[in-house]
Length: 115
Length: 113
Image (cartoon, each protein chain N blue to C red):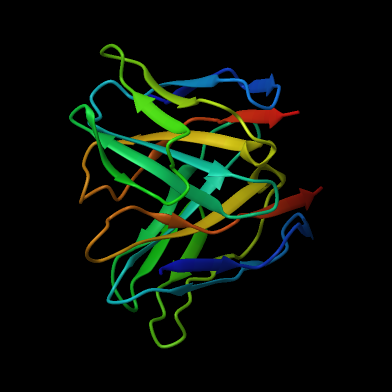
């Protein structure tokens, strides 16, 4: 079965540094998502992306965050100036449809540690 | 807003034991309900779903029934295997407005031989 690929699997950074988390969604999918899970807490929605623009975002997704689809395959999440509280597992997902997105396909996640 | 609450883990069972992982939800209207599973080193993958009240989703011996009266979608399996050891996530997709799925915190299941 096709899968969503995320790199790196682990990322350690210093507070205030910029990080870019990378994802390769499934090739024929049109909708892309970023979620995160802080240790012990719920999986939280960050942002969804369709047709080269953000379609929906949560309150967490403030000006420090941005997403981009720089080419036909990659989908990236950038955190401009990381804070300690950004430490979490970040999941990328993709789906064929939007309103009919009954099945999301997830990557295995990037564990971000901000020191 | 919409939310999902799962029982805290880890749930530790012996092989062939009966499994229940509780999930309750808060949502307006008639959301669709899902269970996702994450095996070690892998991404979350859809396990089963139910789209309306009294529907039963099933897959790989797991079942969950959409109970609107109790706003619950508990996951059950009659006889667990070591290979079922994973983290299980309950989720809902709203029926209107935003269609973005909302997830719970996940419940870790550990099955011993």
